[in-house]
Length: 244
Length: 257
Image: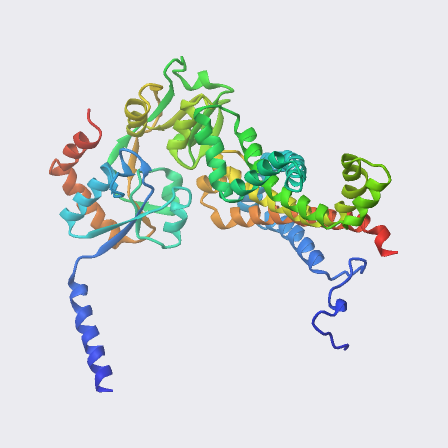
């Protein structure tokens, strides 16, 4: 009996410091989106969004943990409470805002049209009746769906769409411009090119979605984002991961 | 109540029993009822999913029918190869079965589409059919082999004594009898293949599952979407299993007398 009480006390003592320790926030990330978030050769999740969030955490005083999660279903996991937030280049859209709360924007993106090096497609209208690929459930995919007459093909990962474009099974891929640049200028620079930036009426920004109504986590993240932006860390990270 | 012993044949209802409350009927009526009631209950979610997937159902059927037809042909050749006295034919067939059985279907799909895609480009549905039939051909081969071997050796002896050559013996004496043993497991493989076609959605083939995932990804109606997807697959396999049961019964017609 005494032993049990002692054990209980020991447990309590062990738990007390954690109450004062920094809050750990669990983020889901689909690390297949270079250079924003991807798995490097050391099997670590790295990238612009990851570094940005780590810097924000340092500024606002919380800890981050990442959980590599498939994109298709990443929102479902958030809605069912499997993690606190998502750090995965999520563009802030009206439809998504209905289901989740978004942090302050942390990055501005545009949709880029990636085509084969020898192709002449420069506008969405050129792609009437052509197969255009994108990652499932991304703003790139929704852009194709909105485009008149293009046949939308959805892939689990943007890399698979790029591979299909390289071997010639589809005619174009639409995705966020930093990712498009990574594939068209580094990985597949012999075969692919960015032919255009898709014009939209509204500017698109990345944010970190959290469970609707979770103000505690949202405030912490926002505090960090503001600090990272004002201190000029964001600019340095942009130079590191994206270049010009 | 009659006490039923283990192994008592009476425990298994005969297929001839016209039971209204069989498991099949409950599942079938339940599935249909849900597929009708849910879209009426909420047309904006359940109804919208159902309206989104018909071309996916068509693709699933295309892949299934083409794959099963090819797999049957490959399976018959492989099965004959596995019992062949021709050493090379036998070795090739056995090698094929060993290799295919040892690689997961999902990996085979990726291999044929993305790895071989670097060398030869085939359209996505063709890649899906090749991978599915290549995989299932090996399993079918084993089913055919077992079916052929289940026929008493006396049958071939008698046929050969009658002056049939080996090919004729196989064609006119062994295979027609073997069909009865082969059909039930082939039917199972057929249904398994139909369900496994959901794996081809990974190749961006717009089948039932891919269409459902596309719908869920933009609407966030995960529960509603996957409920409908599951019900649609269930309805298709229920109808298929009933058709196969009927075919089995007809093949066994003479044995019952």
